[in-house]
Amino acid sequence: MGAIDVTNGDVVERHPALVAAGFYLALVAVLLGTSLAKTGGIFVYAQDDPYIHLTMARTLADVGVWGIRPDAFASASSSPLWTLLLAAFAAAGIRVVWWPFVLNVVAGLGVVWIGDRVLQTSLAPRSRLAALAAIIVVAPFRRSRSSGWSIRCSWRSPWRSCGASSG
Image (cartoon, rainbow, N blue to C red; front, side, top):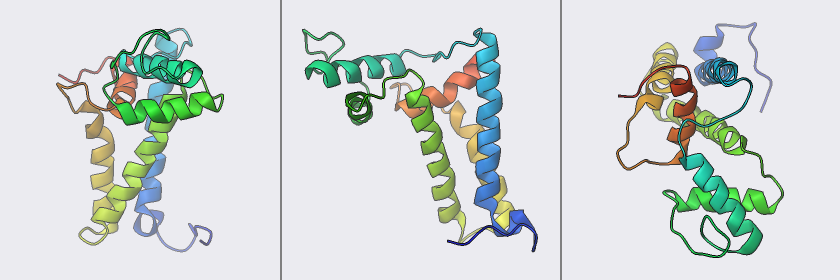
């Protein structure tokens, strides 16, 4: 892969996914900064799902029990594969509360990249950028009655901390 040339031509025309990724990361930074300001600098999730997954991952990594407590099985995870992924990181010594947030930001970048690849054959670059920006802004407001995957929880956390409502 070569270097990205921003001097020859319009960067939006040549790299709409890169511009969308920059927009996404800037939005995440603003929302995270606002959330931290509202919580006195303490990183928190607005929903309990990330904490449940982290606790189950820690218990699984430490004692091999699928549950909240080390002495009892409990099927409390709404996303077993997500819990297993976090358990793998916990077993490797990565046990910080913000780690799922980081993984979700990376997954969000993956969504931008995949979205760009899907739209590449049907939309011009500027239209792709507009579609990707719409996905970035609208996707966090998706409401799920079944509590959904943790990516939604982490995406929604900054929005809710900032006072927005998903309905």
